Length: 334
Image (tube, rainbow, N blue to C red; front, side, top):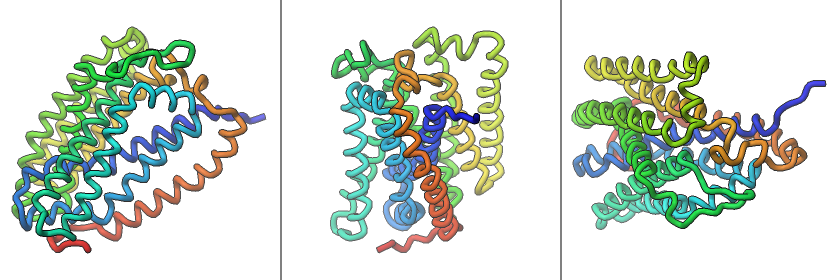
């Protein structure tokens, strides 16, 4: 009789939702991070218009990932939220802040400089909080008898801040390459220039986080360097290096699409590396996906809904990107 490992299936569904969120919401957060370095007027309006049709839909994946974690792995959800309550709430408040600023900059032109500043601060705050949350999860959460036993500020460490800053830089690179793909003239030239510097910073940040991570736990060290799996894991940094070379070559040759695609590939490989470090733990070295999983009956009940809804979300997301393909002008969306 054919059987399925439901916790593993749900882990991959949630991992896919997180990946989709990072890829799709990453570039519009990146636009906000870069906003203060884009001149007021035509260029700034064009930058905003490149994400106007899709930015709110991109956050669907965050809801799916968070809701899926609560429904499929309630123990992990409760533990992670208890440990990382402060950065998670900060992220949500920052996302609300930037969303309000996004809408009001068109409807309240008299205060547009303030709304632009709020949009930038909200984007930086959300990206930084997401990175700190990830870093704090990677470094480990104090758990005893399936209950969080750490302190209020355990999440705030040099490593978590490093991951937070790295994610801000990475999102900014996604935003710059998105502008290369979607804009023309002076804004595109500016985006090429920003992408080159941000590309270097992103590679350095990935190298720093990758070098730090194996020293957080002996389990991480074994995942990456024990024989013979090192033959497999070594392919990840090799592919990142190849993608980086193609990325910088495409900038020099002034390609429009390749820089964004290579940045997506670098993010994909980085998330693959994260998966190598974590799986099968949902709370590193403390709680596995099987320990944290909801009852089998609940997982079975929810699975058909997920298998129906995820393709529908992918379909309407793909359609929206197709409808708004091509270069973007500076006229405002109302």
